[in-house]
Length: 145
Image (tube, rainbow, N blue to C red; front, side):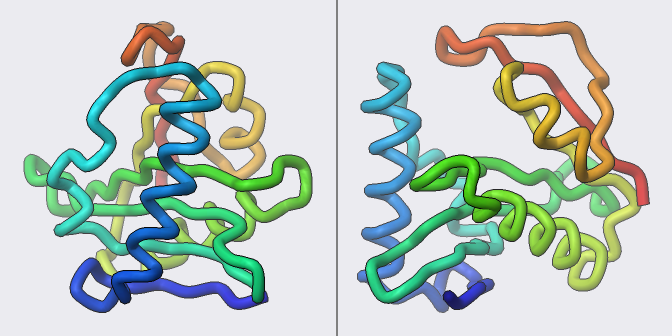
């Protein structure tokens, strides 16, 4: 297995394609949620993914909030196979990159509500009431440095 971090221009076309396929398989098809996944943020994000010889196992992106340069947001956290620890590896690397590369004082994310324990295990705390995003229950969470 290989853990990779790339900026958007550093991604190969094959890597970008595989990332978009994984995100679509889970967030659009599996969750039956019709929305436009390419949202313009990918171009300004760091992309963290875990892959083996068969392809991408888990993925997430992180980016600096335009309104607060000391706040980094993590999003699109996804694992091809759950309960194998792949998502945890990617999330921990996102946290490391947020602090090391961006000097993040705070890391935020919008989590699907069912995944709250996954993020709490890495030091995130819930900061909002539940809300619907594209018809799916979410909560805001943050992790202070």
